[in-house]
Length: 328
Image (cartoon, rainbow, N blue to C red; front, side, top):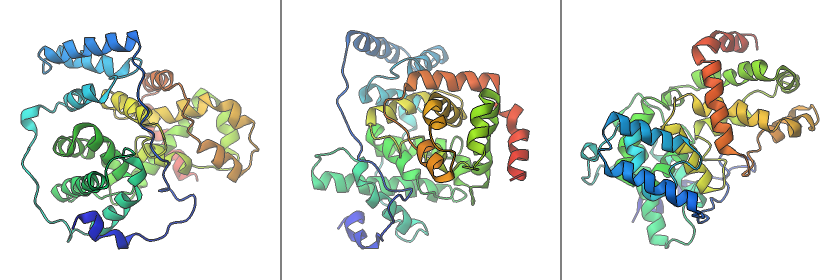
């Protein structure tokens, strides 16, 4: 019996609108126009040369951040590990036979993975889907067992499943351990205190970029709960199009770790007309701000996030964010 089948009975009811109600992830086939085909050929040539050369890694980052990202999962499977300085020889390909059932987070991880079945490709045979769920559970528990100082958070499984789908279990483990001890480390502390403080950067940035919009949202004290799932999961929990999720991951893996955070004000600014048209009332504004439309111009917004990061680096706004949080 598999881990998933053995523990299906631990899932309990969750209310409508819960953070972990997920959209069905759509795996629409990408359209390969001439420009897309040409870019894929250029990336493949880059990978065929010595991809461990610093100059070529920089070129790979440029591909990941330019329009369309890394094109498809065939490329991503080879490129994503390189963006984290992970070489094939670094990957342990041996089977992990550890029994994780005694881990304190085991039941919660299984519960979250059971809820995430709509994030797996549709139409795959039941046995294959269950096997992938088992891999996902094992992947998560491997990381937090190796690094006991890291605390599992609900939403981590959304990040893990994205890597599992692209690069497989063993490479995902090595990528996740790097990310969990760096990019995601504040999410994996004993509390979300540091994460909450980082999310205050959103309002500091909005106040610089569009004071009227910031004041409108702040008038009813909407807070940052609306964008917490975006940040904790690198947007993968909320977006319904798989192609959009992996395109964002291309950019994030090639960028400063603060880019997922700086993308939030870029999205809010892009949607300012809808926000101003919404009644300045807490529930109405929270509902509108929580929306993450699939037709957002992600390439443009990612570039804007980079521009914001250069103009308003984290070290320059950290104090303001801290004061803002203390004054609440």
